[in-house]
Amino acid sequence: MTNEEALDIFRQTGALLEGHFILRSGLHSRQYFQCALALQEMPIVEKLAAALVEKLRHLQVRTVIAPAMGGLVIAQEVARQLGCRFIFVEKEAGRLVLRRGFRITPGEKILLIEDVITRGGRVQETLDIVKKKGGSVQALGVLVDRSQGRFQPGVPLVSLIEMEMEVFDPKNLPEDLKNSPALKPGS
Image 1 (tube, rainbow, N blue to C red):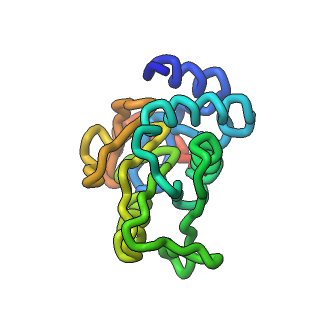
Image 2: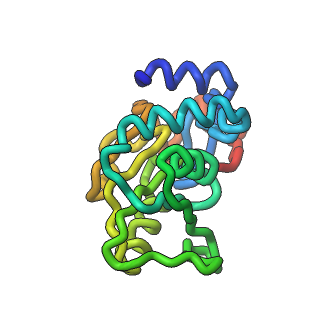
Image 3: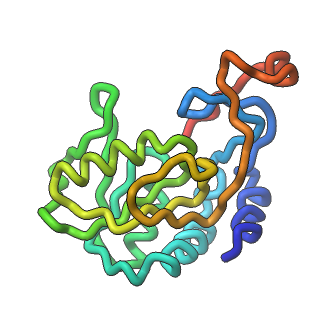
């Protein structure tokens, strides 16, 4: 699947929004990927996951992990198509933790899947958790990489969409965004 083909899926499903948005990172943007809109249809989930799996199958991982909430749907389908285990980290007291009895064994080969990255904060938290537990993240697979190369996870990064999108510090907004209400759609 090409970058443009994947982008078309997001456009067709209404998952690429235009306006004034506050990202999870706190930055502002004129575009927002609401992946949940694309991922509500299982045939689309299967198709996007298959495109990621095609690029990552050679890693032969034991486990797929995702940070909750955004990456869960696509990560679970990637794990299903790879025929491996799926686990996730979730927030507790404001930070991500491994709960629910999930375990990571020393040296376990793991694939990290996320829906969208901009600054990579949640991905980095997840990487740190896996490392602390002794696991070995083989790669990071994402639907949308908005980081413009600024986030370097220290493992191979594979994305379906790489898109340069302007992001703005909330204290330094352009005039058009200063004069429009900001939405925080959630992820």
